[in-house]
Length: 436
Image (cartoon, rainbow, N blue to C red):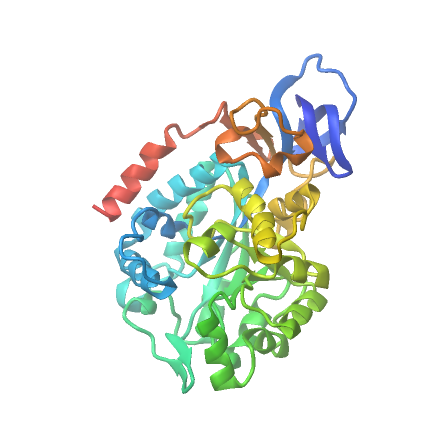
């Protein structure tokens, strides 16, 4: 048994003092407030559950700080992302993803949902192992000490306009299978293990025709199913022009929405779309740092939450990896959009920060007996956090304030240092080989 002592902790029923936390076999066996510290390892600051990064494209991290010189738009940024995608192979992807996941661990993330669509070799040629590219994030997460949900993504067409779905371009052939049945066959070859859950993803209604949606839904039955939804107004316009319906309505009519489904971004929703998502019990994953970086817009987070949709968070293209910052931005974007403060309580923001169930880990995300022993100790003595109320730390702290991270009972970050060593060096080496 390993025993920790936290002067402050955020427990399922609220903030607590002097909390003794016992761990056996990677699970919490006792969490006792008002206890003594005798014989326990003291954790600094305030202790929270491990964070869940519910939307990631690991390879996009190589673009950080490289896409701003000429302004542009989401679509011009995508051209640079496509150029990077062409240079990746299983080995370079592993090196990059390992470093990215280690950076996530430094920020308090104990599990990540990887929205994985880089499936094949350049030109679309299958590797000898048709899931060779999927092995890279699996191994990378194991090496970095965090859990992975591999959201294997169906991607079939190049886009959508008023005339219909467009052909794949040369880069997109790496993302695509021959048809939905071919994707489902490849998907069926993926297996869960102790640190990996398999889920599915629909890239978007732009990349997956409506006729293919039932096949993906059926293949994903009982597993997490994620989808990019209405990130750009152009997607809404194209869907309306060709299908005569919003992207949300297309997913609803195909039976895709539901409690195991997560709509990522959901930035540009009308009232009917908000109601459909909320009534279905689908989660909405907001990615505030990416949505700001790409000028996507501010999504209706409070509206979908009020309608019944749980919220989660993702760092997406990793313009920064700081889920505490994303949780704070969830509130701040609401304030900017409405002119009102306190749109989300600190407890609601912490819930979005720890939404492990949306990526297939329902036994994580709270400091409670029986749950996976994931915890994050956030310092309360840094220039950013000194003097703050521990109950409101999510509105003050950032990734740099994370001191200790435990995942499934294993310490992977201590005193702000990852078990793999200097993560900046790992990132520099991996990115330098891809972007000389």
